Length: 248
Image (tube, rainbow, N blue to C red; front, side, top):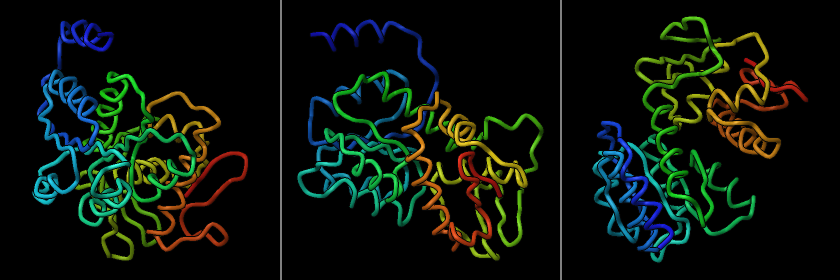
């Protein structure tokens, strides 16, 4: 009843004109149905499934802008599904789970997830995170950069094209998630200067920084280094400035 009253109040508000396609996979039908209503109310196109098997044809079509995946699915682990999607697609992935262990969050982020929401949650919180992820995916706005940044950024053998959303390392394409692209965009835009952890988090996630958020950034930085054949000990690109942040 509380959710119903909350929903009625929310549906009375104006909505934005959106047409992005959202994939929801959650075997808890009440949660999936509720998220569907909230997202459709924001004019998103929603594809909803209660298991991974039924969703595979939708995933393989490639016609998705963002996926919301439950971790505990009846036919496939959500982590495995996230990994499967990341082999081919870079659209944002938000993981849903009833687990609260930090290791689960780190696992999801390491496998390519962009955000992580723990159940129970407020539907409006998920909607806000969907909007934030889509803004980053479509625009890759660095947030802390006030000057006009060229469409192509480069450093040594690394090249990032903001307009085409492509990353090249020594001429070879590197597949990045939206979050990884945003982090690299921010660091390259400030090449030679240190970007603090707080500035980096605010620029990429558009949210208030807390000390616990540092592990989220650390996981994404580690993943980026792996894709760039970089190391923390002898970095060619992303350097850790201990107690401060990162720089290229």
